[in-house]
Amino acid sequence: MTDRPFSKAWLVASIVLFTTTELVLGGFISHAVSGRFVSHMLTLRLEMALSLASYFAGGYLVGLISPGPRLLEPAVAAACSVVFTFLISIFTPLTFFHADPSKMLLGGVLAFGVALFGAHLGEKVTGN
Image (cartoon, rainbow, N blue to C red; front, side, top):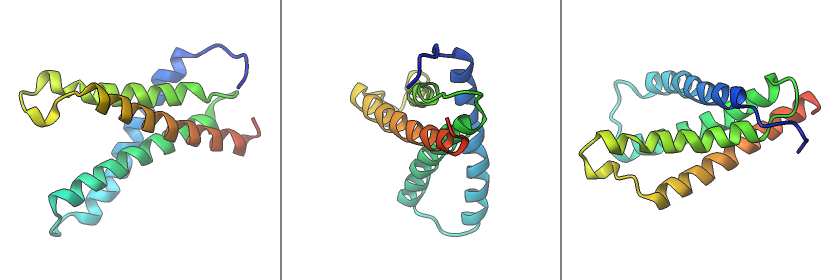
């Protein structure tokens, strides 16, 4: 890593990229499975794969478009995105959406690692 200061602007940009990437990928997946019988378990697996793919793709894009090495910002943004997702449990009375701290930690660590790997690959392509 470098001595560059942590950029809050790239943190926010990364969260926006993750959301945009997930919407775009979700659009393709929804067209591929629409009108077909899809089990609830397959839907959950697709949602999990879509989330991980969006963290990877968002991290990769930040690595490509940032003017200098930015590895930590997309990784922290991915972990924050997981926490934001679990905030639904505050507004939803269903116990299925219970925000268990261990689930948030595990999800945050996975998202952090996937986004960090994506950012690393993006930075390698640009030579940073």
